[in-house]
Image (cartoon, rainbow, N blue to C red; front, side, top):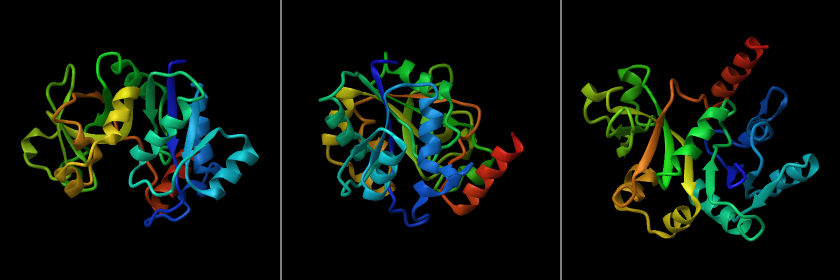
Length: 241
């Protein structure tokens, strides 16, 4: 994957979980754990950061990073700036955006996202819902796909419109993305759509003009949104030792 850069956007300011990147997973800060889990299998992995405290930590621990503006409204915009900086230093065609709070990101997920970029400009992940209650939860983003054999996104929404389609054509979207570089640069230059702003779903900006490939995986990648999630992650790691 020498033609691919993996970027992990990280920032300190989070209303639900302040200083989350420094929360400890297996005795190291989360940002370091996710970087280590990703760089174990791939080169060209960088943290996309906007805080001096994180920069100091990266320098002390020899973690590669790209320093971006703190004023970005989304992680995708931060990734876009990081790409514009990186492309002046190295050659690459593809970007994988790995969330900085997903310690259980897997090698095969990243490879699948990259593979889809040979045919599609953008790719992402989805998995089955555990049950109807989860599917009805607004924080669990829904993606409707065209078919199961070669899934392409038809729509993303926080509202479940048709419960009969759960795990048939409507799945739980997971926010890990792959992009062709030139597409990403064009994507972030476009104005947000009205519906994107209403639902706070950036991917809606591109659906009218671009097909988004979906890789279906067996289950959700456990992320860390709360202290309770952090405790769960650490318990799982301890149980698997």
